[in-house]
Image (cartoon, rainbow, N blue to C red; front, side):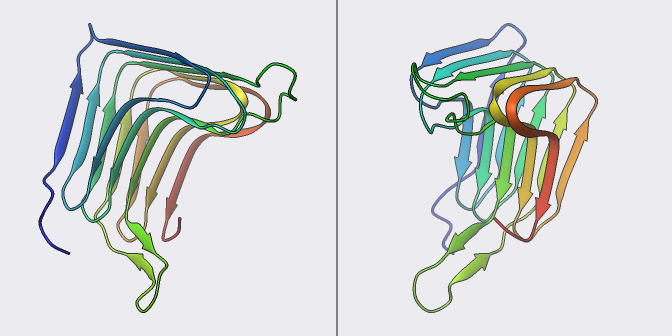
Length: 173
């Protein structure tokens, strides 16, 4: 890969708050880069209220195709999803309080497969509340590196279908 992209760092201090109300999916904080580190440090509050069919929302998202993803959260993350009016409560798609991922999949032509990246690291001491049909509190994924999650905060999943407090995956999408 070429070095045409640098790292990104987002800091949201304790007085910072992010509130989103939408009929579609949303992300409170998103850090994305190609070759370097995608880093987020959040001490503020994030609240997303979404009412839609088949949408996804993330409180904090960090992604790097070939570098590392690092998230530190001591703030509160609250995601609320309700099915659009007249639809079943099972129609709303997934939500995650914190989602960090390294690596990328290339599925076209010669050389298709997963390509390398560094580690995914998530450290959470904040409260995460998920209210939707399905959702995860923390999701850490690394295609080739290590996925490391440390949680000392409270995670509450309140839904009608399924979810996990913490999910850590390596080696696949």
